[in-house]
Image 1 (cartoon, rainbow, N blue to C red):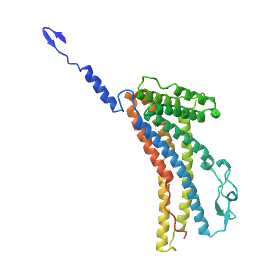
Image 2: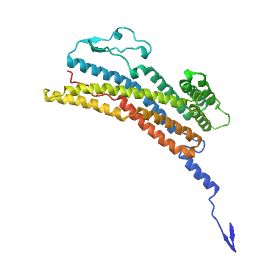
Image 3: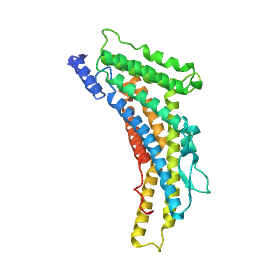
Image 4: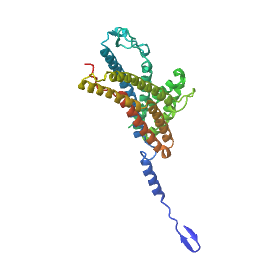
Length: 341
């Protein structure tokens, strides 16, 4: 109320209860009134990481199939004498760095040899496994339904954060033990709501994974970027082999072929081009950067949900689209070639 001369002017005020209700309605759009639940976004990140890992595994198998098809085209076209790599006759070594491909090749030519991504297959596979474990642990903490599940999830998250730090630390040094300790401090407190415990553990976990080590490396960023380099190398390796295969197919096309043979050869070449085009448009480096951005957005959102949640939604959506596109490109294979018959 305010007096103005002899008049009394009423200044309307929104009831405190109404403001509180409006606040809760707003926060419920994030997941719930405080503390916040990021289950949907954490699950989307985890699915994207799974897709990157599955894409690498299937893409590596596709690379071997690409090479086999290229060799078959080369040998069949020339009716060449065939040699067998000596590695086919002895047990394969345990490390991919010491392996030699077991494959056929043109006799008198250069035997097959590993290079590029094949030499780093074990390393990339291991890093992707660490990322999967970490992402799955975030999901477990976020979705823990009771104390037993929560305690197990916190232990899992602490271990996986430590694995990230070990990969990024100097020669897997002692710096890796700092991160799990930070997460382990968030234990079950009697009388504290489970959703609050989940939120605090999620916050502790992503913060620890984003805290620079003594050598300056940020654990999550280092592992994602290094794994992204492996995905990039795999994509380039497939592209090189597919280009060679496509050139062989194109060289066979000409007026001497029957109409049916020409159509089949052209169809085979177009199938290779389609896979090659998909690899050109799916960017492994961008997908890795997208995962880093999504994780950074998650850290910002748990620190201040009311201001940073929209940024998290966008970053997660962008990464999810990049991950599925990359998985589809890496695992795609040309239609079976029949021109060699």
